[in-house]
Amino acid sequence: MRNVGITSAGWARTYSLLLLVGDVSIIVFALLGALRFSSIDLDSPLSGGLDVTSLAVPYWAVCLALVVTWSFLLEGSGSRKPDCFAEGTEEFTRVFNSTVVLLIAVATVSFLARAEPSRLFLGVTLISGLVLLLFFRAAARRIVWMMRSQEKMKTTVFLVGTAQSNAAVVRHASNPLVDAYRVVGELALSKKELQEQSFVEKVVDNLKDDEGESDLVILTAPQLVTPHRRDELSARLELLTKGTALWANPEEVVTTRMRFRLDPSAPIIRLRDVQLSALASSYKRVVDLVLSSLALIALSPAFVVIAVAIKIDSPGTVFFRQIRVGQFGRDFSILKFRTMVQDAENIRTPLESLTPDAGNKVLFKMKSDPRVTPVGRILRGLSLDELPQLVNVFLGKMSLVGPRPPLPSEVATYEGGTHRRLAAKPGITGLWQISGRSDLDWDESVKLDLQYVENWSPIVDILILLKTLPAVLDGKGAY
Image (cartoon, rainbow, N blue to C red; front, side, top):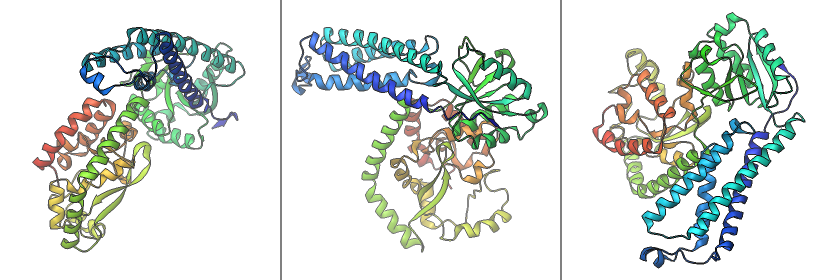
């Protein structure tokens, strides 16, 4: 790997944080100006129906809700993401769209709650806030342009391709008109090496020593790499928090995960990642935290009963801990009620030799596993052994809904885009839970997990949670 000694471009995170601070400051300023212009005090009650007036909702609460909601919408729209920093009109479009969504949300809530906030106050807030936000973003990008003229605040890229294709990109990047990118390293491979099965591992191994210097990995000869390996590389790089892009014409690199970045100075095609936005991640974390807390409190008597039953049934600990692989490939200790005899792992090897077809090609499962205790069989049949994972959810290691938490030995067998499962937090339940659990073969399980990760939405989580209880009571695949 050739390294030109440029330090990491951590400026993107700092710049995004500064945009957040600037956005919030402007929204607060717009609200205070609107209050003064419309002669409303912060303690003044909101007018509306009997319910609203009886609650005496003050305007300071309305202002707080607007600050939080507007800021989250700006984040959720991607207006603070590096892919629109100082480039084109996309940033301004996202800011405008966020404001429109806020207007619709305010109108909807006002109608449903029969509340009547001052139209003058809302109008001045939204119009002045939008104008100031657009001016602020315009000023911020001028600062970025100025810093880039001093070789700062550029997206640092690592090139992967042939020596010739890398050299062509370096020549292009050295053009004064291309001021958004800086090449900090490269991996030059032969055409044969780009087509070998070990291609992805070679790239990942080189980037492990990168120490965060590069933000974006560009395939400079993507036509030599199969779509399957491009997807696998993109999935692996997501775990290293690096973006992936292709340097080519669109017709040369057809792939299912393509999204275009319009850049007048460089033919860059970004591959779509599957990580949730900050808004979606915050929503999912709040739901997990609230529901897991309530569930732990409500189920605490059941925890005591189950613990006593386990101790009476067989000698050993109440809980079973096991290392699993979580989000971005980070190991964590999963917590379950013990359902097997204490030395179950020591008995597994002879059982595998006796029943080589148990489970699927990756996971070992037996429908009548002799290691399972009588109480354990009941707990597994009702999925009660999974309840301690609520602690993992509360601590942020897992989510209520997500892909099944894999073992390290499973992850070692991953191929292609399967690594994309690790872009999301593993869940107590998921599509695999409501679709047959242990009766699924390996490929079906992977397909369901990837389907969830790549198509997440709050509605999907709600539907899975609602279908989980019937699936548990049915008991299909629970052994």
